Picture 1 (cartoon, rainbow, N blue to C red):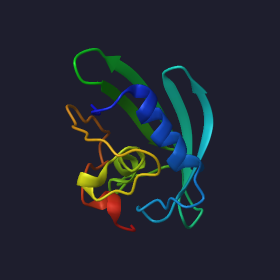
Picture 2 (picture 1 turned 90 degrees about the vertical axis):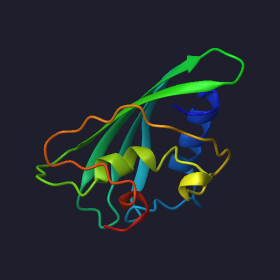
Picture 3 (picture 1 turned 30 degrees about the horizontal axis):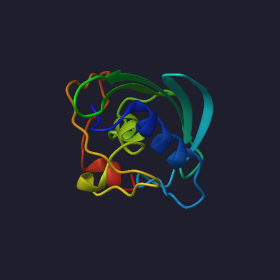
Picture 4 (picture 1 turned 135 degrees about the vertical axis):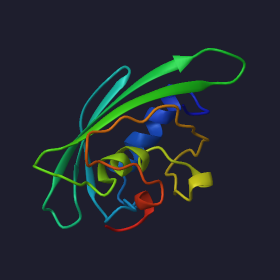
Length: 135
């Protein structure tokens, strides 16, 4: 959940994906926007060493109220065989929306976030410290 409108969250994710100045803190991967719809972004990430490719799908849901809030659902999937991902798929997602309180650099807008549910396959991780480290 982000403390911002979904339009702002999507704008920030798009900005990080397309920016020449933003650097992926998890081994300097390269993101590409594959497609987008009103409430969805489809993204590809190639690792810094160009060996691995992951596909990421984001879906967004605006929640009404006194303050803007955006529900973020996302899935990142390695496109090759992997037993242990060292939290890479988690980082692929988190690095595109995390804010200043997480030590992340925003391109356009920083906002607070909270996680309510994380599901992953066997061997995948969710280490919050890994998303800023080169692995």
